[in-house]
Length: 330
Image (cartoon, rainbow, N blue to C red):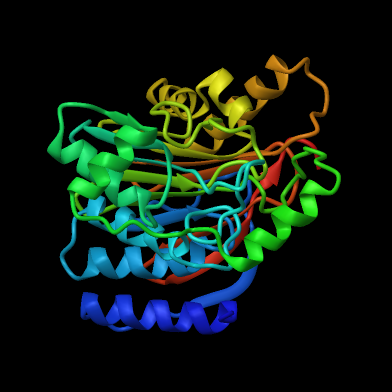
């Protein structure tokens, strides 16, 4: 199987060539995200986890080559969707307990429209199907067989998404069938991305293969508008990653945006939303992870998590950097 490094170089070379723009070199140093928001900046792209770095590369160049913020977030998250070494998104994602790779995704633009798919099989790029739902149908979400039927009708190829590496992991799991999400381990970590252009327009995308070895039919927060992703072009945008059930119970992305509407900074809003999740679960240190990212209209951003270890990437005119979020429980 292709190594992760070779895949990323080839993927980025092809995508950046298509975009017709020079490469933006990522700074590999990881920086801690403080409680204080950084200086305002436009444009900006921010994405969850280490795979946010190559995703940001493509999203940034989409903006720089004249693409919209919706174009940017779609193009960006397609990178990990197609990477066989990313175990929690798209092709290469770990299957459910029956061996099926099922995908969830959502996208939302500055005009308030949104599209989503859930429990989708056999399609490598669910984010692009979600965009088609947004733009070509009167609906917000399509699910399961209906989502697949729509994708095929739109010309998306039907593919086998279970890689040999993922199949072996599933075979190993079946020996014990012990279901236990692990904090900061890629068996439940989406890629969520937010983009802000020079005019102040915002868009977001979220895509995942969901919890590894989940029950057949389980859907997480990623395709749920207001849970895994929310964009209000008058205020800001937010995206979530981690255990979807915890995010869905509290509509975390919506809570973050509403806190910004009430005057909180993106950083303050993320921290309040994490505190609400913990309070909802009894106020004690939970055995699961949730991380949140937020951006406001001016380019201020915030990041916060329940536990240490949540990383994210920020791309601006000065570069593309991997950062480490602060956490409620250090």
